[in-house]
Image (cartoon, rainbow, N blue to C red; front, top):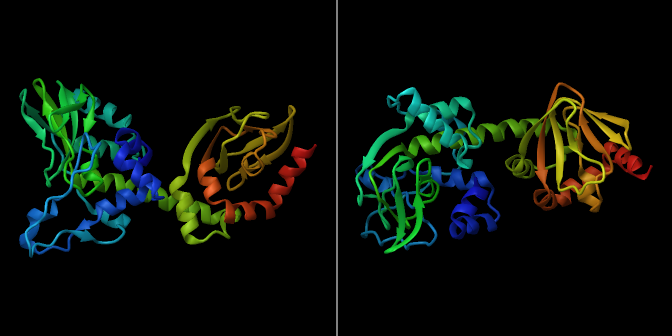
Length: 348
C-alpha cells in the first residue's frame, strides 16, 4: 500500500516511506485518530483530509481557541476493526461486478480476501454529479468518502491548475482516509459523472482488519520457524509486515540456478526440491528457507528450487528488507545447520 501511495502521490507518501514506517503503521495511525473529543465536538472528529491530487501539502487552518483536535488513540487492535458493521446498498449484479473488478485490481485492497471484497462492494453507495460540480474541495477539513468513478469524467485541480483527469474505473479519495490533513486538491466533474462512494469507517476498518489479521497469521507462523526464534518481537513484526506471499504450482521453478537473486524465501506450505546441475540435492518443507546465499554473499543462485508437491506457498522478503534485518537475521542464518548445507552445495 505504501509503495502504491508513493507512486500515486510521491511527495507525501514518499516522506512516510523514507521515514522508515512500516506500511501498516500508516493505516493504523490514521485509523485511530479520534475518540478523545467531547460528544458535542463530533463535527471535529471528521477532520480527515486530503485527496486525489495530494501532490502538495496544504497547511491546516487554525482552529478556534478552546477546541480540541483529535488525538491518536494508540495502535488499533483487530477486534475493533472487526467490530465495525459495514452498510449495504442495493445494486444490480452488473454494478457489483464492475465495482469488484475495479477494487480487485487496486493495490489499496491487495490485502483483502474475497469476503472482504464482497463486503466492500456491498458498502459502496451510488451518487452522481453534473458537469462543473465539485466532488471534493481543496482545503476541506471534512473528508468522509473514497470515490470510484463508474462513468463520466472528472478532473483534479490544485488552485486553477488541472493536475489529473479521471475516467471510468478510476478512483480517488484514499489519502483522506489514511492521513489527517486537509484536502490538497479539488476534484470536479467535467461531464455527467456517476460515482460510487465508500464511507471512511468501512474503508479503514476493512483494510486494517485484513492487514492486521494477515500480520497476526504471519507473526504466528514466523514464531514457529526455528530460524526466527532468536528475533525480537519488534523484528518479527517488522518482518511480518514486509512479507509478500506467492504461490507456485507443481514443477514450477521458484528460483533458477545461475540467475541473480534479490529475494529470500520462507516456505509457508508445500514441499520443494533444490536442484543443482540437474540433480536433486535437498528437499525442503514448511518452515524451511532458501535464497539467502545470493543476498549474503552477492552470488548468483547456486541451485534451482522446484515445487515438488501439488503446490507451494512461500513468503518472500526482498533484498532491502533482508539487508535492514541483516544484523540479527544474517548472524542467525550463518549459525543455522541448513545454511551449512547450502554452503556445502555451493562449493561442489
